[in-house]
Image 1 (cartoon, one colour):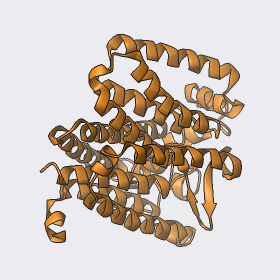
Image 2: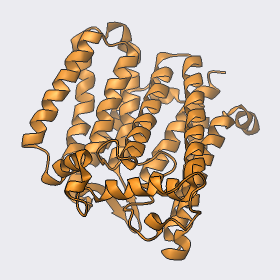
Image 3: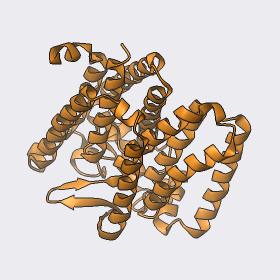
Image 4: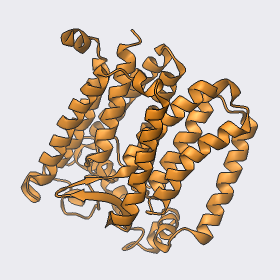
Length: 362
């Protein structure tokens, strides 16, 4: 039975994901010589554990989420409690209180919240997509989204708050929201952003946005990250400088070169070829998820697949955009490539549920 299920998995998707993980690990590998083994081997452990988690959730029946709303609500309240707890006892890193620390490892509760929001919204809209014209469904689903968004915003983690908001918005669009309702939501969002600039946003967050417009106003401060990442990307050429030979990344001019700015590090050391491979593997991944979504037997499955695609797409768009200097810096990781455990494990978990959908749709 185990071998039968193993053969039925979507191995094209799995191979594309492992290839992305391999590119990330190759980029991190030179740290063995410059900073010790901790970063590389810790990431390798996360990949192995994530791969195991994917298999576990692939063989579990995904309908445990679809058919048990109380279980989903329990997961939702646990994720909210974790977000409250991190504000109280979490560790502050780079100005944001987003992490629980356990020895040498960390847990970022917002990553769990992203998965739970996809599950909650997929369940909610799968039962009510015909009645989505009723404003109360938009309001109720908005409350599910707004509570974690508010908690994440006050960490403060603007990037993850935007991810949660666009997950809600994207799933609603796929579920069938009317154009008039969508325009009203965009107007409300624009008004809230305008108010947050004067009331909520902290000075360093405003500086990031200003630095996006003109990073050379403060080249050694708020504009530094953008300038160095653009230099790294531009210096890679066709084949790159070679692993461990990137001047920006290895000499530490490029900040967060294995997390937020790993794309710039890869572009510098592996060149256009490395970047092209990343885009190819992402394209294959999305193609397979889309195929599974179309073939799915129920609305919950389709909306979960679409929600996962929105999650990955937003992370990719923001991460690569900020590495190229096209969007403000938001502290968003590159799925399956960036170093870090919480995001990687949740991504593998999402893929595991999609594989479960695939197995039970055949």
